[in-house]
Amino acid sequence: MPISLYDALVPSFRQIIGSSLGLLAKAESFCAEHGAAADAVIGHSLAPDMLSIPFQVKSIAGHSMGAIEGVRAGSYSPDLSPAPSDFAGLKALLTKAYDGLAALDPAELEGFIGRDMLFQMRDLKMPFTAENFLLSFSQPNFYFHATTLYGILRNKGVALGKRDFLGMPRMKM
Image (cartoon, rainbow, N blue to C red; front, side, top):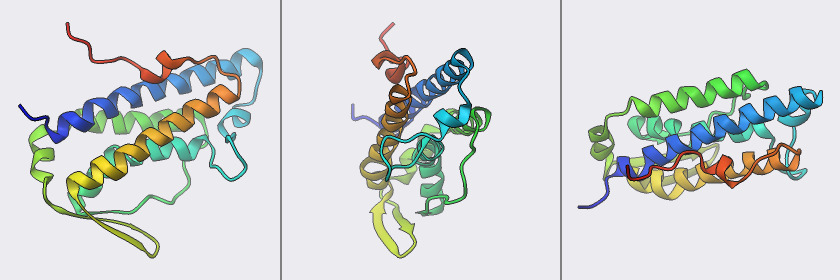
């Protein structure tokens, strides 16, 4: 039996969004335990030319549920408005994406296969099929930003390990 588009995306998106929520909770506890201002952690990036945690979290949501909403519309343009700048707002953004993914009908995603899809950012236009946009563009971006969130928090001293990033795997029961 071939794997469905839904199965290739949604459970893993939810797994990593769940773990990202856990990362933010650990970061918030780290700030409280160490008397650190939340801004000192949230505003951090790994390199001067890299964006900070709010952008990474916004991109996790944008390349998961946001990408699926884009496929529904036939085009996706990144939301360039400012991201939340506090732990509560960041967690709310991820929770909204997590809940939106949970409400998806698998048949709807299968219905996207073969549809034209356009990624557009300023003057850049990239045509895709819906499945190629989701699997070759949004999914790699999703993992990049989730990994970057983890790396920033590790770099700031938040006690995290690989299990924190992986979250809850879908094991055979």
